[in-house]
Image: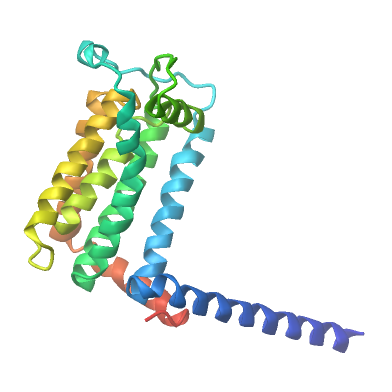
Length: 250
């Protein structure tokens, strides 16, 4: 009986290992076609970390007072629902620029992604220490913009507003290509313009307020600066290179 159990465990371990190999091959054949193998796990980890922090931090502040930093300036900004297209469109912008980031250099990739990870950790601390909220307007129209804006409100509760992750990640996407000779100057300008449009969209959809925007952009710039100045990305890069070797993703 004991021998049979050991054999069953052995077969299960082989099955799990085989499943892992098939998963790695699947990633290489799909995501590996558009970005280097070494970038796949750090990028997936970035998405998982952001989602975990953004949604998970809400559990720690349930029932606590949430601060509303809305200013007179914010109240004076009109609702422009068609900017919901920009707000949603930024996800495509992020994907494209992260792919471009992987094609500049491995060092620049790890510098930028390390800064993004650091920004998420800082956001987690702020979200828990300083819960924020705002009062959203009632959207009554039936245009595409109105429908999308109601969808945004339904999917995303008015929490974790400061700093704005939408603004910080969009700014990271601009930083990723800024001043890089590998990226056409026209696309660098486009990235700046689109990042600014995303910033505007967070205001006119009433998803964020003025201070969130400043916080998001400042956070992105600070994290990129400190990661490069202190060389924080080196240990970060070393960690993921070990992970990639074990997963045969190098």
